[in-house]
Length: 572
Image (cartoon, rainbow, N blue to C red; front, side):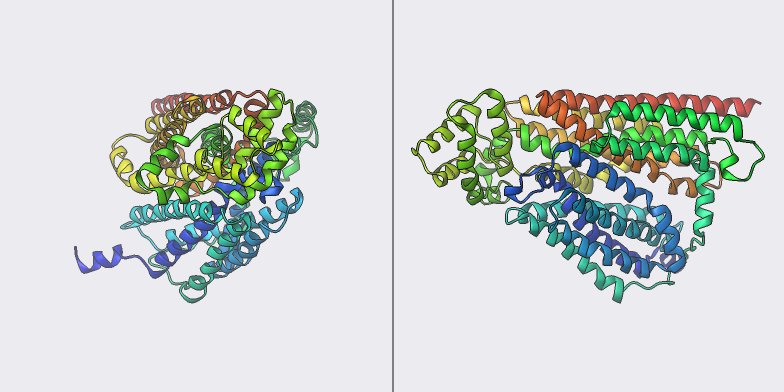
């Protein structure tokens, strides 16, 4: 390689600074978000928020939805006011907000602080990606983004490990650690990151007005936004319980009819004033693709927001505990730590709640409270132990020690975290192997594999070796993710207009935003109704797996129609 070629391939110093900050930011985000379902639904006596699953789903749907939409604006602001300044603003918002997440205990106060975290993350996200883009060129861009994606997963892998360990101390410590990771980011941002020094990078000079004009070209005009945004806000209100879903769909029907009537009576094709225009899509086939990929991101996010709860509440991981204890007893105290002091405090209350005669719903309710303390004794053992405690035959401390020794469970976040570990180890090899095939068939296959992982997870609670079963399900899920996720963005290049690929790639996040929204709302409803009320968690996972199959089918149909239209255009 010549000296000139080596210079072109070298990364600018800002590239390494940005990747370092990405690791710390992901440590903070995934250290919190992977455990967020457990924290929100854990009882107040254990330091959690004590929310129900529908409230949890509302938070986990709406906040990430906004996080993925706001970069449209924050990215334009960063280009105008400087990347370094936007980094500092992002860290100034996130650092105190992560800490405050552990200090607020009401629903709306937690919502407000969680929203602040999302605003900070939305300031950070486009700037760090923009830095990678600016500090690479055609000779090293593929490698540069490969390194960046690896750093994302390194942070995603280490964050839950650290958070899972410190939550044995207290939930407050989890949020203090997230705040600490962001605090560290001030050092490279202040002392190492240099604005205006980029390696062959071309600055994005778009203003906010230009961004909004592009949004109309890619997604649709203001009238479409007027139709869609209230519909999205309405489903959020319904999910929170503000109105019934029946009322929501009735209002939605009336709102859609009113807009269609508006377009018929008042719109004119030559109008430049937005409210006199008809409802118009931007690039129709791209919008359809985004809507289809919403299904992919809806099921993908269940790994973080539903699977940890399912493992905690339904999957007996004692087989993993035995396996770990046989090979590394010291590691067991890390992966399956039980706070016996907290457990002994809650046991007398559960014994009182049980009473002398308990029906099956009462026993199930007590079991679901007990699993928050990371023990899962069989129903008969639980009932006998609580009766013995009530009659004074055993002390709460003795019972807690006995159950912690015999029925402890592996922390759900550690099992989920295997996904990140697999991506870090295998993504480059899998991507290299799959690059010989076109994007769409690989994307469909990956989505089906991911769906199979969800169905495998659904069987885990009924297996004798539940821990190993759900571990294999996570690995299959990770395999599907590694196959499909990179190809989902590669396919955008195949359907975007010529010379506009980069612009269309910038709007791909809309599918991720909608996927996060529907993932949270669907998780809250299905976990409440199907898993806990109907006691049919397999039905819940079948719902998610079915969405994956529908998404794969829709992608196939979409691609066939696209090829057909392209062939007709060539022969015309």
